[in-house]
Each structure stands twice: as structure tokens, then as C-alpha cells.
Length: 83
Image (cartoon, rainbow, N blue to C red):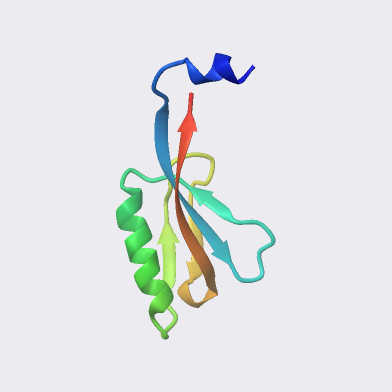
């Protein structure tokens, strides 16, 4: 069964920025044109002690997301296969 899926050729991949917010039970998965730049920006804001209002407009089902930078509990950049 595993052999069938292994021989399909190269898969397309996309990058997702996964955001963990304090007080939220589930992480927020966001897609951007340049996810590395957004990840670096949010990582820098996460280290800042002063609160900053962050507003992002990702691609996909989430149209707009607003949060305060001090509410970021964690941040992940994930590469995932898609069809």
C-alpha cells in the first residue's frame, strides 16, 4: 500500500505560518505570498516587550486577522504537501 503513494513523482509544497495565541485553543494557520518574511516579522514582534497591534491579510479562508503582539505564544513555519 505504501508503494502506491511513493511512486507518484514530485509533490507540490507550500509554506504555512502557524500562529499560537495565548487564550486560543487552536493554532491559526495562515498562507502568504512570502511566508518567510511574515515569519521573520512576527518573530521579531514576539521578542519586543512593547505591545503592537498586528493586522495581517493572509491568502485562503482567513481574510483578515488582528491581534496584539504580546499575545503570541508561539510561531511555526511549516512546509506541507498539497494537490
